[in-house]
Image (cartoon, rainbow, N blue to C red; front, side, top):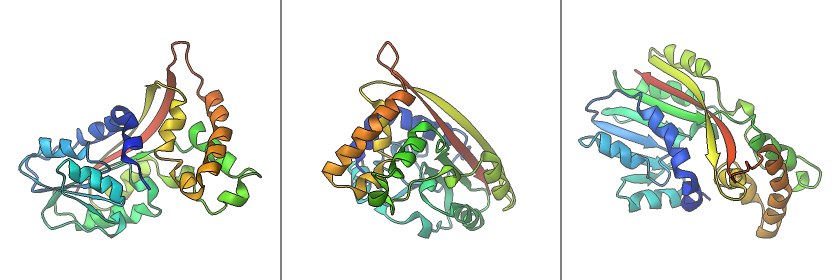
Length: 253
């Protein structure tokens, strides 16, 4: 289950890549704008502000996130992104930090590029930090002898969960799109106690949390915390650097 409150703990840092992504979409008066993976709707609201005359649709797999988005007045629906098909008037599609959860999402991108009308914009952003200590330490702990028997069925994303900017660019150019692809590593200054743990608790650790009861979860966190503290030491001023690589693609059909 997604927790909108936990996810919004670092709303400013999580939101910056969204704005960097959408800033490269040059649509002027789109008829329909769709946010695939809208989360709690705090960022979807900005799409309505930018394109006030457009019909705005939003989709998320989490009922809790959809409820939070609807509370903001967003036309959000629970749905599976793999089954979504664009309407004929869909001129902008934004999918932010979603496709890393979808195995085989390359075929989705191909299909959307073919189905969108000529001149439409497809903008996606995915985390590219699966080789970072925050993820490698989690995978190593889950695979260690004390935890392997309990978590053997839990799927934690590996480095190949997403592709490089060039690989995405090749894919969409082959579908006839104009493509702008890049990557950025954000050097994020986090505050609070164990901020990296708190960050991944809202995202990367969700599969582990879902597999454990409260007691086991507390034990797993207790095992992981010192590893993360060593990998992400606290500065003398109490803040912590958290480097986060992200991959961006903006394509025009």
